Image 1: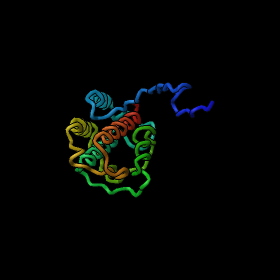
Image 2 (image 1 turned 45 degrees about the horizontal axis):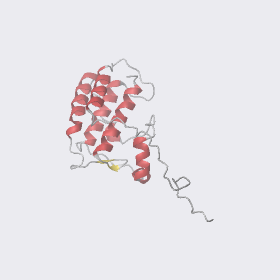
Image 3 (image 1 turned 90 degrees about the horizontal axis):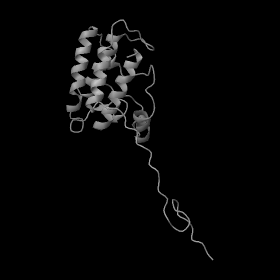
Length: 174
């Protein structure tokens, strides 16, 4: 008797195996109200006396960097694109945005690190105002290219911004 070859996912006799679905890991995003509130609360805990666990920034300088990162994302601060075509490939971009941790002391574009900080409270007020603007910014209709990844979707901007801010708040233990 000849046996019919099994198709992947089938048992003997032709019944189909049910594939187990792994729960999809939902990444935090600034498009989510609760995630923004949590970031805002952590930012309120930041003090000028907090020392960096890595890197050379102090708290006001870090907030100035995040303020300028928002301004870049909103298209208000022009930046020079990085020449790293590999990062613009969809699978690489996906890994960096969704899987790999943000590296410590990673190089960035000079435009978002060159402005001197005004002071902790001034930078905090500016940061919180820009944070609250995030969900209403028309990323899909007024696209801003990221200097490393190129054009990003609204969801990608939300995930990347949360990941970037979380990285720097952890840098200061908050």
